[in-house]
Amino acid sequence: MRVFTPIRMLMLLAAAVVMACISACSTTTSQARNKSLNGHWTHFNDTAGDFSVLMPMRPQEAIKVHSDAGGPAVEAHEFIVDPEPSMELGVIYNDFPESLSYIEQIGSPWFFDTIQDAAMKRLGTCRLIDTHDGKFTSHPMRDVRFEAVDKRLLCQTRIIVVGHRMYQLIVVSSAGVDVSRAADTFFSSSSLLHDAP
Image 1 (cartoon, helix red, strand yellow):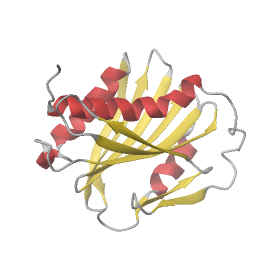
Image 2: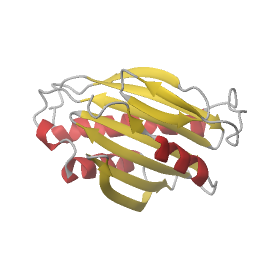
Image 3: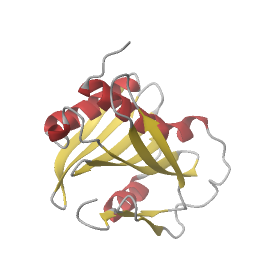
């Protein structure tokens, strides 16, 4: 039986988040993706998740439970859209249970480093392009951009921690495809409905 560790739980969450967002760029069909990104983006609000963001179409919603032997289960709430075959974007949030031994580290540089490293290791050969720590209103945040070289994908993510809740805004695109306008629209439009979940 594997022993639960803080690093394993964070790696499971990071891996699940990244893999959920990469799946459409590498294995999906073109159904429901014919909407143009040049079309009208609309606000998507999730009151339970306490966030709002512009999206080019209504997201597919899912709740997935991630757990590790000996550790508490964590529900990840996913809101994913794939408006065209070369790009997918989404918001994923989860609440960390109070029982986690590292709960006070959520939002620390150690936490962000662990999530970032786990996501990149999960995807094989990756090249870090940029990483930047900052604040989302008053909450800790990290932006990360990296290329999954073997999969020929560019991953851009914004990780925001509000209390014990982690939000991840993710844009995954085929390498060489310019999605900068869509990514800027997506990231700059995100907001919290209230200051804390």
